[in-house]
Length: 348
Image (cartoon, rainbow, N blue to C red):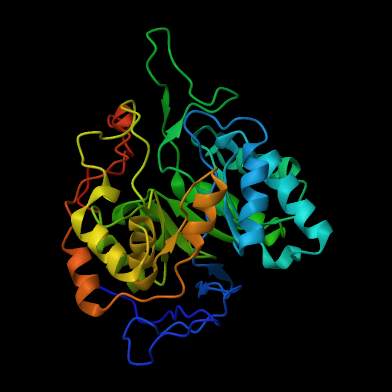
């Protein structure tokens, strides 16, 4: 299932008009996909999550490098413990005149201990304070699973078991809608929601704003075809985290799945286009109308990941890559699989 409503052309290197996947006409500095609330989202962003936590100063350098390279979308979260560095880098680039604030798209996330409606606005305000910005462009519920509200990010009982909390996702959503009405955030979305959880929000009586995006794991080994189709039917954009695979931390990652970037097909396509396997994988997703947020703190990789607008995969190549799907997640979050709202028990 490929999307044809987005055109991915670089102004320096226009693609063939006959290419069925080059239907998004975007300038190099402005590769955007429209959202259902009238805003738009840059099709590639810089992910800022790090496991283990990033070395102090590294996020600041990574974000500055990304903006210099043409990135206008930065994906972050309170739980990543580096929003202050993201904000410092953005503000510095604005002060230099490299970008205007309205050209930057920042996504923040509501953590699992703050689903209680009265905690939502203070959580967003804490992110704004860390960034030293007046508003953010997108605020999303990071996971549909709530933990015990409070200051502990991972609350545990005396037996070292996580303390879960039964939240009301619809009530949480209403609190987010109030934040949008107050001008603190422009767009609202979700992450790691399955179809049933999306429908809870979409079917909510008195729904004011639909989610604009659902941020989920998505790559050639886990193509999310059914969820993508459902989201497209409801005008919700998929944002792909771990678009290149992920780190191999056995605490939360399925390390039995083979490394994506060693795949033979991706290697051969890379040779054909004189691109890396990572660039092939990122190009595959954006041609499907999926936003990608590869994370990196390495300047060379940050630059390389952005260089995906000067070539296009053919329809046959797209189908061949999609056929690599193994329907296996890297990010399983099995440590929370007994949570009532654990999203990955459902088919999609």
